[in-house]
Image (cartoon, rainbow, N blue to C red):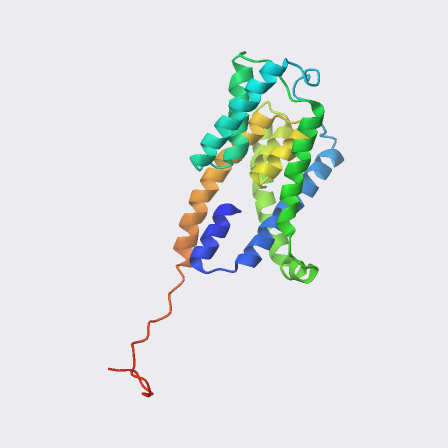
Length: 239
């Protein structure tokens, strides 16, 4: 959504319409993917047994929080896509994966973080009336249908060729927002690393592709012609 809105402003497109279509597409994906997985019996168990809530000493939890915050702020400063989320995930993954710390967040803190991320995603509908949503419903459904069909085709192909859980593949290929898909993966007990890596790559590829396509087929918004200065009282431009 971020690169689409930036290009929309640059090319003089309908900012509000594009924002509504993008947000409605993400909302439809968030509602349909879990329902579809449950309908086809693809609900999964956690990737690995979780450690006891709050496992690890207070010192290890403090080290985890400091390292994750530092890496998140560093990636944010570098303007890395989804810097805060992926930066924190990178710092925690390095510490836990290398065996330097063995700590997990308390259940109440992890649940609060998921609720906060969900509230941030829902807040994107602020100041949007029902009539305005309905006026863009056709475009939103069309965007969702095209993106969903393309993603489903490649997800089924990957699931057929590789020994991966189809639920992980579907959420990884779902054309939703990075933060929303990460929350969905955590909620459905999917592999967050697999899902996050796919959405990071998709973000980078789509950002480049949409910039090229928009400038190639949309063109730039032409600035209005500048009028020459005319003396007060004259009714025609100077030659």
